[in-house]
Image (cartoon, rainbow, N blue to C red; front, side):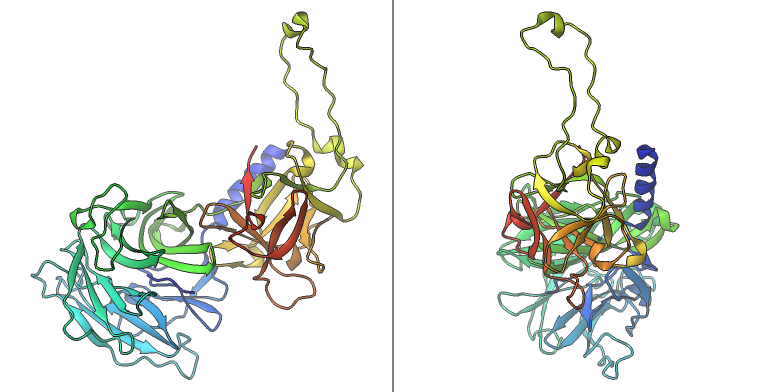
Length: 488
């Protein structure tokens, strides 16, 4: 659906087990065939087959409450100007025993059912199938072409071809004289997006509606024209069954289908879908959100960040975030390369420096952070864990970042600097939003800045120099804004 402009061994096991339970959307994210994630008055909305419609105040916890008349299947929604266009399949897909489908559109000024302006217009038909032709009019996906302003719809299932039609973006009606075009086979629940001179057709391949046995997966082809031909990464046309994998089963969820793209910021994108079955949710169909990466010009689902214990490494030069404490040297029997007798002695591994070896040398109060050469020392090892009670953002929960084996937490300051406090209290300036960027790196953003109102959506952890971390405005074009998590 469309673009719209989260002993030490035992501790690690507990963190990993806990993280796996909160990595997916929370609340009641049960939905099938979700639409675009649309934003309206600070909330997120998505619509599903048969009236399975969801709302989220923060993009992380989802619940029922959205409303859409007409029932039917696989809706999509797109904001055009100051109105929302909703499109859905009234029948088809084998519903009611056949493939004689109808696709309809309708408008609303708002998606908030409690608003006095909430009123859908009467639905109008924009295309259909008679049950005998080589197409099934269902599963529509909308694209408002940013280069031309023209409005396109792809639709269809395995029962024939995926087709393309054009609508009038002012009325939502079919453009007069428009003739449908075949653009793909062997998929359904298609979607169109545009990026950097390419049109991308995403289709859902495999079997659906069979719970934990569903084989749904999402594939993609691209073209220079919206009408195709859409070709995959090895030159196969989607009209011949081609398609490059975007996302398949994994992490105890299977059957991803119905792709959607949301642009949060430059270089920060999220893909939405549903999973036919979440093994940890009793096999229910649920909403799925993943980072959306771009590799060599192709979209691919990123991995949900779960937390763990890491070196936090600056993309700027590869140095590590660390406490500004004295470097404590490790003792080691010096080896002489010219002493053959010594070289023939048994090898004894050198143990890592431990927290107990050095923590007595650290100050008791706040300790600033800095950046330095990584040496797998205790002052450079950070444990990152979700904080479920703190809520979240689109795609993830807020995290705390503490020195491994301690409760010393990374925190933002009112002077737009970063420090560490002796104890994590859950204060908003100690909570961090961690998002994977389209190039695979991460941005790390405090939930709030002390002294500033509202949620922070501008300042990120920033490498102002090889040794100086700070908070500065996010800039995707600069490696200063980017970080990696290394488990050495």
